[in-house]
Length: 399
Image (tube, rainbow, N blue to C red; front, side, top):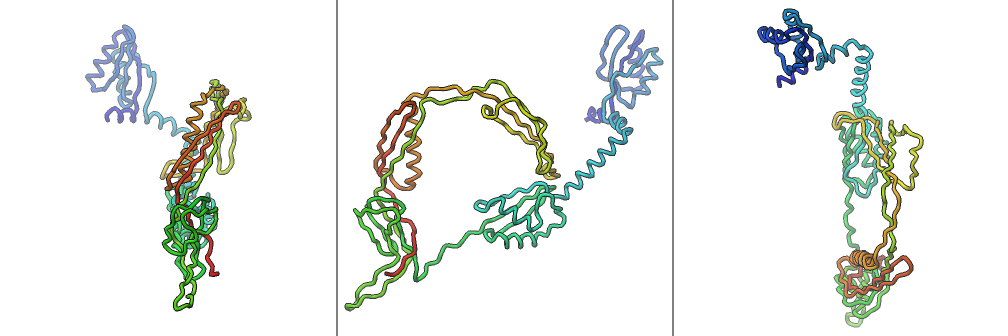
C-alpha cells in the first residue's frame, strides 16, 4: 500500500556522482530521507530512487557531500498531472468527451429483446418505434404505461412487454400469448385423418366413429375417425347423427424409403499461412473501411470477424464499433474416403433420419442397399414401421 501511495505522489530516479557518493547516502539517512533501489554504477557514481517530496532535500544533501545529483527519470501520477495541467486544449478535449459521454447516457444506442419465440425481433422493433422506443431516442421521456399499452395494442400476440433502460442500453422483455385450446362444439367438429399411408393394425377410437379397421389400407389424408357419429334405431326409427371432436389412435404399418449419397473423394482445407487483416469503423448504421483490397481472393479464404463496441456495460453505450476482419487463405487438398467408412456414415445418417420421421413409433424392420457409381456411393434404406397415423384433420359434416 505504501508503494502505491508513493507512486501516486511521484518517484524520481537520480544519479549521484562524486568522489565519495557514500557520504550522500549517509547524510540522507541522518535527515530521514527515504532512498530505495540503490545501485553502484562505478567507483564514483551510483543510482537510486527518491520520493518526489524528498527531492529538494536530497539536492541539498548532495551539495553537502560535494556530489552532483542528476535526475534521470520521473514517474508517478503527480508528475503526469503537472504536465497535463499546462495543456489547456487537451484538458478542454477531455472535458468535452466527458460531457458527450454523460449526454450519450440519456439516449438509447442498443436494444436487446428477450423472451420472444414466434414473434420476430423486427416486428417488435417496428412496434416499439411507433411507441417512441428506437435507436437514438431520449429515454428520459419514456412513459412505461403508455409504451406497454400501445405496444400490446399493436402486437396482440404478446401478453406482456416491458422496457428496462440501463445506461444507453434498453432491454425489452416480452411474453407471448398462449392461445387457449379450442372448445368442443355441437356441430361442425373435426375428423381424424391419416398423416401417412399405411396398413391399419388396430384402432382406438376415444371419440367419434372409426371408418377403418385392422387390415384396411389407408392413404395419406383419408378420414380414419369421423366426428359424425351415426344414430341408432329405437323402435324401428333411426335417431339423429351426433357431432363430436373425433379423438383416438390409428396404429398402422408404414413404409419408408430414404437414399443418401456421399462422394468418395473429399477436400480438406490446408492453410497457406498467408493472412490479411483489415479494419473498419461502424458509426451508427454506416461502415467506414480502412482498406481497399486485401489482395487475397474471397472464394479461397476463411474470414473471422471481431467487433468491439464503444461501451461500458451498465454505464453507457455508443453507436460506435471497431471491426477487425482477418482472412486466412487456404488450398483444397483431395482426400480419399474408403467405401466402408462412407457407407457407415451414410447408414448412421439414414437411421437418424428414420428415427426423426417415426417419432414415438416403432421400427419393425430396416434393410440397407449399397451401390457405387463412379466416385460416389449410394445407400438406400427401406423400413417398415408401426406408428400412430391419426391426426386432427378437416371439419366433419352431417351427411
